[in-house]
Image (cartoon, rainbow, N blue to C red; front, side, top):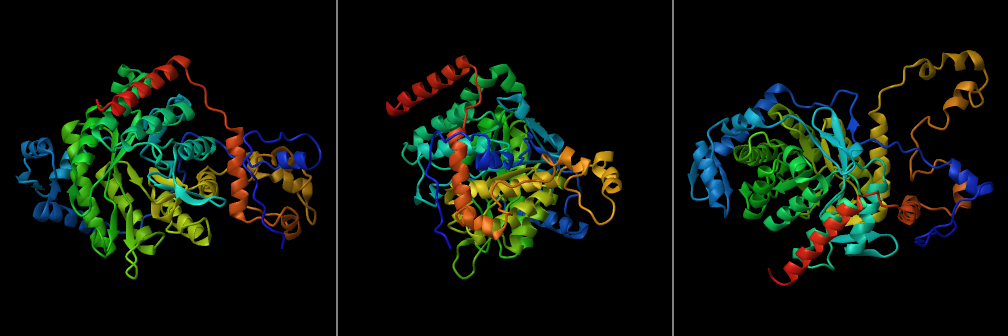
Length: 520
């Protein structure tokens, strides 16, 4: 078998000239339709009956009433709950049965729109919609040439530009990878600026510190205008509980800041059965629901009507190694049921259940776990699907090739969600009459009219013959994906931005960097 070929990164790749192999490549370019978000045109998957759902909801209320949650380090939050009628003892807060649900359902919106810098890319979160977002939070990056290494500012920009280029990805990301070469207090200024400058999609807010949240809001004002920001959701942020049953001061601070500015806040309990939650799926779901109820109630007490979403990820740990496992039947069932619990609560469902995997490289394990989890989230009706492309190693690494391979999964699901064409052209009776028995449809008029846009076409998958594949270097999916992301970066063009807005963003970023460096 020929040695696998890896294409070097050429910032300015050769142009494809007409004729011969270049023309064939141009004609074979995959059709990847762009839509700001997906609307599911099919019934969602439900796997638990009414009795089971009510049982989990009752158990969540029991946890909140008997055990309660700890809200650590924030006296203001304790005062807010006390004023609402909760039982506050020290930092432990207990809620009467149904109290949190009643608070949430009194004011939380069932769906909302998030505005993008390019309004054509506004996304709808809730109802039948689905949004795919890139991986986030990885300290390492991986590609098949350089292997695993700490993420850098350059890596973050590269991965962000790839996300902007992929038609099936609907948002930017504030942290596809960590900028390990940048001091922690300064990182958010670079990532927020980059989201606005190098993408024109809806952005993610930073929650690592109160000041990071404030800076995110101030930079958003420069893009959207203060008045527009006050009456529109332009930032989507996610806060996590510290399972089991703890909210820490950093997450609460970010939650309060974004909620008071009426920007969307996801409350997610990252429950891994057997570690941060009970071993069984039903027990983990009850705890997860209890934790998210507490956080969502806090949002609505602070700012009634503020957009929010319920996190729906349920994972497991290996009882042999203690490490997180992904794509397990337990996780898939948990995600599917949690999505139904969110709909019953009346808030959008969000899930870190995109193309997630424990695999360290983009191999068969990565493909299997990623496909299982992403499909479970999609068919369960999750509205905001995080980590849809690029996730490796349980979230410790963001993979260049993995982003491209996962994009095919997302694109295929997007294609599946499209309504069936039952027009006269789609029914194609004219073609059946034209061809008749025993012939073929390759040259008929219907095929000639539609072949360029007919059928979903992947970026990575190779459906050619063995001989053709061998002649082109015998490249596997990861090597093909390597060439694709390099081509994307070589051809990337930043979306247009008003020069005055860009200047204002850079001025704010640079001023804040100087203040942080000077200790002010």
